[in-house]
Image (cartoon, rainbow, N blue to C red):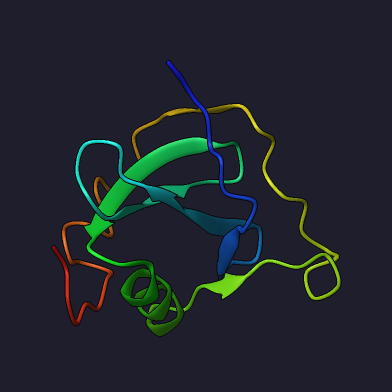
Length: 107
């Protein structure tokens, strides 16, 4: 199944030398608020976290080591292609489980 990402603001977290976790904040179509979609370098979406407002979502991305992607700062990293699809992470729901996510105000 393919997903359409509408946000043009990508966030990136360098996890390891050749591994990056990516995120975008999208309006939540199911209810009011926003959803952070997490995906890997191959555009496989592996986790989601819902937020009531975009300000909190951005603050928590920063708090968890994500930064806004710019080509100037990250010229050594290619942005994932726009072919988003559901894909399980080898360690499961690493962010929404709270295992690797610090949160002040999750929905």
